[in-house]
Length: 483
Image (cartoon, rainbow, N blue to C red; front, side, top):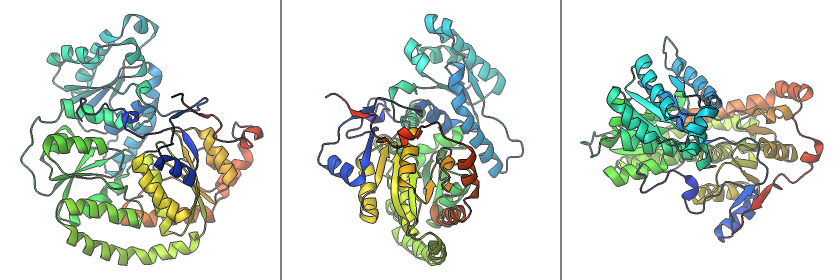
């Protein structure tokens, strides 16, 4: 992703907002009328920074080591990604499961005053000596960005002394409040430092399949199964990938992504740089979205007729099972929380089961999101949207106020309210494609039938909010910015 055409900061996109809340119909009217104003929260609780997304996207690369140029605390965010890496290895039948190879420079007060470039140089050499990788990725941080360490100069000075390709990634957390910017930072670095500078001979049938870390191994298998039906084979990037596979990116016949916000900018840059066409549709969760995803890539490679035949056969297989589960879920009220692509995809999934959407939390609101919101408005009428990067205090207020029958998303907070919950992005379970539809439906039905654990949590564990907060407007801290 060329830095001269895209900065890697998602707020730079026109009509992109990350602080808003209210009725889906009202937000839609304001957005389409051009009256949607940039805002900020005067109080914020918990914010996922872009550094974790840069790190999580790459930590599973087979032949890599990672240097985090930051204070010790910044590396704490890697714990969840590393745990997911453990699970992914187990699912891929790796016999000796290992941790990601991470070194932190541990910037301290003296480094903040005098600079940390010496520490970074030494850390890269240590990574080379200990791990002998093919690639060493250097992640910046708020601290290294504020003190102005010249990361590129350090990389240039150390590169002759190491065999690995050293790749700097500018993912300073203060640069963007939209954590998906971290994915862009990683792809910018991949393009600038790892990809060939010219188009490679096209490998017929090779498809770049870009997938975020929240995709399970079962999801990967499902996507690859669907592509194989079309006579295509996937170059799965960057999760559990390698230097060789990354360098094959310019040889692909086409590109697609499992998440609509994960690699959209990168696929556009691959088209501009190498002429590789791409499909930018939806995350394949639910019948409608899975059909749309498959048709998108089939149209690019001239396999539409074969795709329609396959879709017809898959409908015949899964629709009777969906109807079975639908009898248990019909009319149940749902609140959904996820990333921009996944939250809207999960909302479309409940269409298959006749459920009612009452609330949706998403990190970003933009023109792409509006397409999904229009569809959901047609299905569910008016519901509440919370445009928020984390902000659990708003989420629990809304969930307690709306009283859904089930919550889909990161369940740590809502579970304490006693509401049945199910995860939709835990990197462990299938959620996508025609097979994932059935798993999620059964999972929701089971949680509704067996809510005892969450009810016991609610009886014995209380969230740190007073009743006065639950009685307050959940969006009262969102204030329009001065023009």
